[in-house]
Image (cartoon, rainbow, N blue to C red):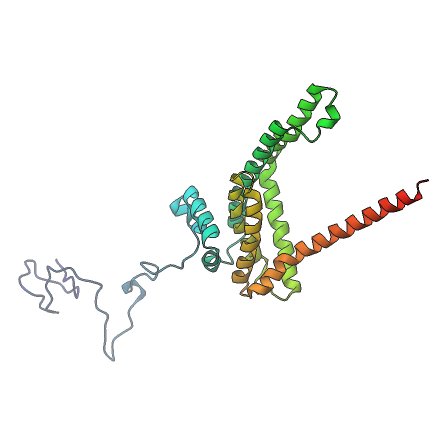
Length: 276
């Protein structure tokens, strides 16, 4: 027995003309069944309603969280492009919760690529220019060559093997320092995970290490900019406080190094003054 596509009323075996119940054309394509109306009508059941997730607009999110649908390589390329070219929009769309495993995976992949590229360029440089340890083997050329290889290519192999571990440790340390400084400045609006995600996705600048000579310098400066923009968006604070949180550890390290240098210079001067 056929049903009317509009009201789901039973139709004769050979329907002709319009539906006798609702007056609709049985041959036309209908939308969802009409909902009951009137003072005595019962509320629609859950089965009669369209699923809430079907066709519902999704939040912007970030490409890395869609890697299971668009592929790992595409997600890696799109995420890196968005972080480097439109960081403000990226960090606004970045979820601040959801676990640290996913952003850490991104940081390790991109950071490892940059670290290996940097180690490769350094190995080539030492092979062409020579090793800084060459003075120890100046009387034996074979020893000098061995020292140059150790300083260059052995370091490259070590970075290629253990680079992922170095990147992971660096991300945790950087996130911990930034979160602690933010806490001291009263700029923490979210938990540690938000800061960790900012630091992890800021590793996108490691891809600039693929550019020889100036890649590391430009990447380092751009990383600081991404920290400021990311912390401001993730913790919903002003850019001034985010900038202070990023620059304060650098200033403290520079002051400590300068103080140690002055102490060392003073000690050398004192020893020189005691010599006959």
